[in-house]
Every structure is written in structure tokens, then in C-alpha cells.
Length: 482
Image 1 (spheres, rainbow, N blue to C red):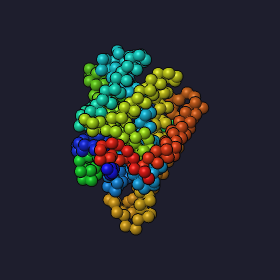
Image 2 (cartoon, helix red, strand yellow; image 1 turned 90 degrees about the vertical axis):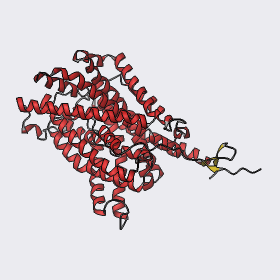
Image 3 (cartoon, rainbow, N blue to C red; image 1 turned 120 degrees about the vertical axis):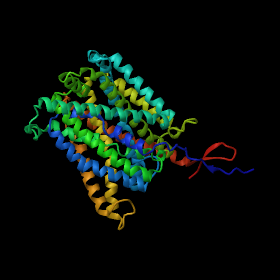
Image 4 (cartoon, rainbow, N blue to C red; image 1 turned 135 degrees about the vertical axis):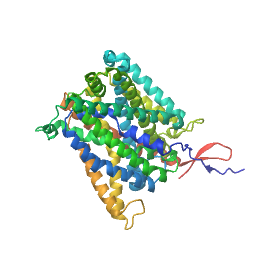
């Protein structure tokens, strides 16, 4: 008796994200208070960098996300978009960089969580963050918790994102509110000269790339495109609201830090230290502990949002057979890409452990962040290049925007992204060894790109003869030969 093989059904993910969920997701993913201290440490000139980045990078990013999500809806986001426009390898490289950047970024979030959460116990316990055993245990516990919640599903995990967004709003409101009170009562030592370009702007150059990194996140929801309720109607409004709120919060938080503590900002505990300093001046020192709690919720939401979203990249790559096919498995009960989430957690845990060896904590934080910036911005090169291609190739655009809008957004975004990547190779002021930093940056970038080429051209070629997955009538799995 002959057996006719039928194509295997693609794993099905649940549509649980509404407009409110997306707006909160954008705020918690885009507005990351943990990057503000390292930026504010370079002085008032960074306010101009924020404004330039909002106009030349963030606005084009919103247009690119709406346009590409309209043309290519579905799971995968930056992976799917680059693949559809430029081909399979470019899609894989875009998705790979997006995923691996989070391997570096999530450990920085864990470190930041430890540095902030100890203030919940009171400022006298701040030194606990320097206790390696405590910091390691707290980081790995949070990582494990966020992984479990994302495996259980976005229906549950999204509440961590939402709580994180609420924590972000409250923390930002307290920070900015105290700044306004301090400014109105005592004035500020900040002068117009602090907003001028310094004579030696080397450290400021690194900030521009970090600012662009801080403004990414609008594309995150589209990575989970198959889990959004009515994405073509829901996404544009959510992008607009999320973008406006995030941009305003970034500028306000940076100004407040400059008013409160000037350039002398600790890149891990700077936000809480600023609030503690300002609260003491206006006799509300008790507010420091609840503020640290709200900020800790915000950080947990950031980690959850980026971990859950970026894990969809290896999930889709596993389905395409450019990475091990088991990465494309979904949980039989919760319908989530659990294998990809577990791999993400294991690698991030390894990097968290590595943070406690070698350089100081602040320098390690800055090195991880700088390399994450390079990898994070690579997919945006493809996004903006896609807009330029649409504006040049299509006589009548078939998407959401006119040729002129696509050309302006694509040109502005592409040039700004390339500039941000180049400038982050200039070391930040926390870096003690220039040669070590450059070796880390160039070596790390080439290593990650080399791994992407290996998986695509070597592993993908070995998988190619197996063809597409099928299931025979008797239920046995197999592959249809190409």
C-alpha cells in the first residue's frame, strides 16, 4: 500500500497582543532607563544627540516598521523582512545579529537589575551589588524566572512586560518630577556652556551609537507578528503612541540626571543615586526604596520583552533549517517556542557568569553594551535599505507610504544607522584599555558574523538535501526530497 506524504502543519502561535499591550511593550522595550546614565555622563551635549537621533533615526524607524509589517506580516520581523527583500542569507544575517545582540544585552539588564534592586532594602544595602555571589545568584534567578514565564506563554509573560511598562512610567515620573522640584527650588548648576560640543568629543561619539541603540524597539512587536490581534489595524497607532512616549521620557530623564548629579553618574546605579540625592534635598528620602522597586519591575519587563521577542528569531530560523530544526519546536501545551527560549537563557546565563571575571563591572557593562549596539543596528541597515529600494524600484508603491516618504525615511535612517555603528567603536570613558576595547569590538563583530556565515552556508547546505518537513499518512515524520 502506497503512502502519500502530506506537508507538516506549521507550528501555531496564539494571537494575544492587543493595542494596549503593544503600546506598553514599545515603552518598556524602547525606553530603557539603564542606558540613560551612560549617556548622561557625557554632559548636556547629549540632549542635542537625542533630538538628532529622534528626527533622523527614530521617526524613520517607525515608518519602516509600519511599511514592512504591512507588506510582510508574520512571525520573524527583521528576519522575515530582510529575507523577502534581499534574499535568504541577508534575512538570516539580519535575524542572527538581532538575536545575538540580545545575548550580550540581556546580561547587562541582569547586572542593572542587581544594581538597582538592592536599594529596595534601603541605601545602606547598596554595597550588596558588589558582592559577586549575591549578584550572580540574583541575576541567574531573574533570568530563570523570565524564561519560565515566557515559556508559559505571552498570555502570562506579557503581564511582566506590562508591569515593566507601568514601573517604567512611575519610575520616570518620580525621577522627572523630583528634577522639576529641585530645579524650581534650588536652580541648577547646568549652564548653556554644558550643552556645547566639547573640545575633545571622543567620549561623546560613543554616546551617539548608544542613543540609537536606546531608540530601537519599535520593530520588536513585528518579530511576534503572528501573535498580534489584527496587526494591520493595531500596529500603526501603537507605534505612534509608543514612539512619542518613549522619546519624551528619554529627553526628560537625561535632563533630570544632568540637573541632579551632573556628569558624575554611575552607569549601573546612577538613576537610583540621583533620586536618592534629590529626595534627600527635599526631605522625602523614604521614596528611594519604592522607587527602586518600580525601577526593578521596569528592568524585569525590559529583560522579558527582549528575551521573549528575540527568541522568535532562532525559532523561525529553525523552521527554515538554517539552524537546528529543534529550535523551531513549540511547547505542546503552551504553544510557545520553548526550545529557542531555553537556548537563549543558557547562553545569556553563561555571559552573566563571565561578567564576574576580568574587568570591573562598569567597564564590562560598557563593553557588552557597545558590541550589542553594533549587532543590534545591523538589521536596521536592511530595514532602511529596503525603504530606499521600494522608493527607487516601484513606480507606484504598494505599501502605506509615498515614494518621497520612503526615500527620505530610508536615506535618513540608513545614514544615521551606519554613523551610529561607526561611532560606537570609539571607546566610552569607562574603558581603561583602548587596544583591549578595539580587539573586543572588531573581534566580536567578526566572530558573530562568521558564525552566521557558518550556520547559513555550512549547516544550511547540509540540511538542504533533506528538503521540507512532511508527515506520512501513518503519522511518521520525514522529508520531501528536493
